[in-house]
Length: 306
Image (cartoon, one colour):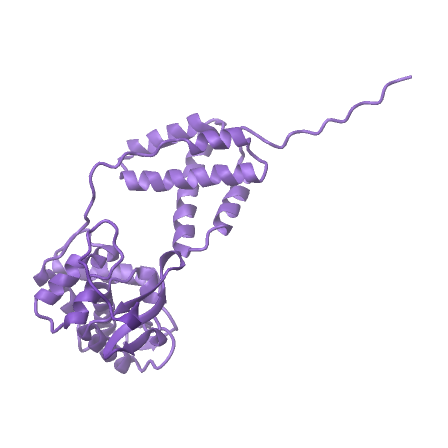
């Protein structure tokens, strides 16, 4: 009499992940993120790691391999902040792989203990002087439709310190008058944070010029403009704002100027000190950008704007 064979279940946990497994885990990571900016950043970081991981001969997904990947990133002379963002995506990838049963929890815990790159000092980015800030804002052709739109976009970036995503999501309903001052009310920004930002008078005047020229009465404020000057569509993309800043920064002679650099409180205070007709609320608006790298001036907002 033969004894019945014992059926043993194979353990799904692996030490080496193939491309289908990595694609499955990447989808799980991206679905767990709410912010479109985070999804874009994590997608790029994970795809970069997957390309490096699959180019090597069947590496195990463990702490040693992730440490080698960090050395690879450092060899590319990337900034410490960029390296840490890439490693954060890899750690999230390992966490999701362990959560779905594809990777051992011990290996995932080892990957999460990989240290990031050390940051020595603080990068302040590019700052414009008062003359350069006014010159950049006044570069677009005021007599053309596209020029008025670009002028309004630069005014919002300089005067209100908005991010690119916040600029393209800006609607007419956000612009409201509070305590005899104009403000951007209940704007949903990065990470779902809701904030209210006072708007300088010169920014409001620039926006009115664009809205009057484009005939926009509802919906999003900034739209596409054709070469013939016709306004079309219902929105613009973040790439449009990127190219606008790059175009006029090149004409100004300032290299490596990004839209995020215009969020610096120093730019806003320079616009005020330069005599652009801003009032006391404009000062609070210009330094109201949520910039963790640069010390902000202590300001007080009206009670209804908090």
